[in-house]
Length: 234
Image (cartoon, rainbow, N blue to C red; front, side, top):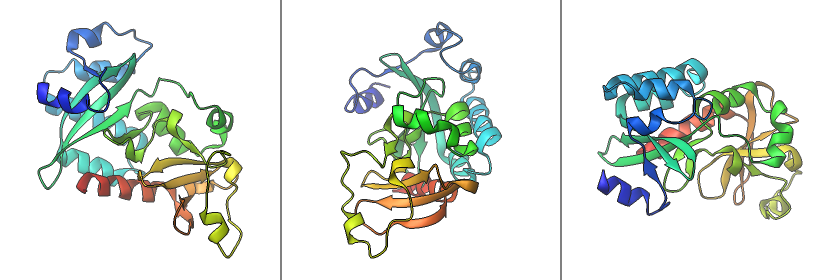
């Protein structure tokens, strides 16, 4: 445990791993009841199964490869807390034997993203379901990337402070409206899987990058599912 905490605190010195008695004292309205119930079980395998059942219930089709990988390689789950923000810490041992830590934030934590909150009703239902019922983002802990970022970190592509030099290099006009587009997935290197609220029927999305030509009309979940698994194996 001390070795794990030393690693985790390299990125956030205030992180705590909660014990069962601490979890039991959290107000019922603060974390999902499913979290409380699964952590009352002493059998780690049962805990993992219960949590992955929550994934399957809500995004079993959309993230089927991610869920399949977690079933095989997830070895522990814990609740951690940073300044009253609660998350599930996933400990994954990948096929190379490397230990990876992923964070899934509390879906009851709230938006904290003004532009996105104003457009939330236009975001595809499947994405809303994940964020409101499973996690407020699920990503590689150390970099907060290679996954679905928390709502407060979703990139608003229309932000005037962002410079998209790629736009000047394209031979054709861009086919999405940056002012209504949000990057929910990032690979940590300037690329996003983005949703344009004005053109997102059937989870239609764009692979948007600061450096390379965009890919339009991709399926949001197919890309996200594939890239999360790539991250597990990196």
